[in-house]
Amino acid sequence: MKSALSSSKRESAYTRNRSSLLVKTIFCCVFTFPIWTACSNPQIATSEATATKHDSEVMESSNGIKFYDGLLEDALAQAEQEDKLVFIDVYTMWCGPCIVMQETVFRLPEVGDYFNSRFINLKLDMENEEQNGPEIGTRFSVGVVPTYLILDTDGSELGRALGGASSSQFIAMISRILGESTSSFEEMQARYESGERSSEFVQQYLMDAIVELAFREIDNKDSDSVRAFFDEGAKYKVIAEEYFSSRPFSELINETDANLVFHFLERSRRGEELVEFVLQHYEEFLAVSSESAMAQFTLNTTLGGVANAARAGDEIFVEYIEALESYPLKKAVDHERNRYPESNLLPERMKYSWEVDFLMAKEDWDGVYKMYQQRFESWGENATAAHYQWASRNLLQSENSVHREKAVEYARNAFELDNKDPYVAVSYVSALTTVENQELAHQVADKYRAGLSDSEQDQSNLERFNDATSSMLGSESDPSSEEG
Image 1 (cartoon, one colour):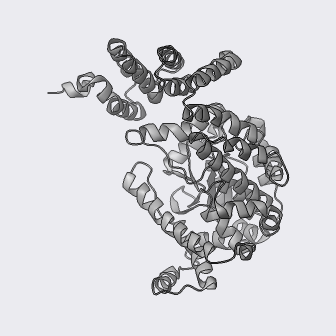
Image 2 (image 1 turned 30 degrees about the vertical axis):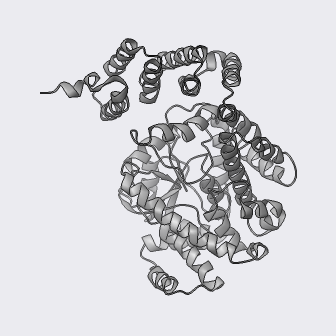
Image 3 (image 1 turned 135 degrees about the vertical axis):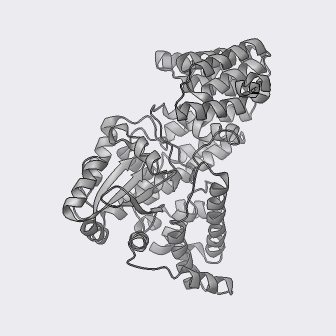
């Protein structure tokens, strides 16, 4: 399960890779960011043709869920006409669990029979403006993907569930929302707390826990809600890891345990013992799961290992990427490339995204400087504000005055391209204050504020911008401090 990031502007794969993993680290205490529960990065640089092809393939699944090809308003009208409810799969193109659900669970006959008889089914890409995805995602306060919404014909929400699941778990989630079934998890919880630890019991306990977690509420704007959500998930992950370590790994090569491994280790990375075992026994796990699940697990754990090694300055990140070019891991790459040619999980994109971090970890600032020069030369007029923003942030960490001057130049270019983005504006102010140009930093802050409207979104961004820059500029730079 992953947090949904709605964006009206789709940036390059490199840029959003940096955004997803660095912006949240830098500003997480000031700006409200969606939270990610897996290592995969957003696949941003998709073409409309690719996205359409993917959606069409899912809709054409003959035995599984039949998805309505239209907008939400039309689906609601159709549901009223057929005396059904509306089921919405809220997803993004980059969300691993979403992909596995669409390519496996949604296509199963038993799942199709259940959903097609009860619902008008709709797929909603939260980043697709033609579907009104961002607007509908905001309307229903969707902060995590995949999210499954059940709506009445008037558009009111009857319930929701979250996350990836097996077919039986998925149907159990929805049947509970409809009141067709109830939960016995409290009994399972009591048995576990009383000390029951047989392998059969713990296996079922973990499968049931996945269903329970699907009903937990998460509000991305409430840090306590986010923390509680992930704390509970972490609790079951510890139990799962204890369960896995209590058995010979070879005994985990079965459908149920493979499902548990993929679910609870989705944030794991290359180098971890069980991850390495799964990849070394790729074909055996493939036989008890699916190409989609194996591809997502392989690529996401590789990405996690690449990111961790690159940030540590460990050259093994290159070995992890090169391993994807050889059998059997290349099967995962081929599957992903066929599914989504713009995917950030492809080896060439991993290397492109993380080689700067490797150079930074090695404190090779000349290397970072030269790499950005080469990239901006290749990007030319296609360079975006976000490209310049992250180049500036990274180079600003160098003590070299030439590098810092270039960082200020990049920040200025970013602001000239997009002076409405609060992150871009904060980056420019940060660059200027770092080189002790306070006067210009104040001018940039004033220009950013002057360009905002009275809309709720702009005023929210303004508040966050002021919070982020107050320590850089001083409280007197915040007009709100002059009240009274």
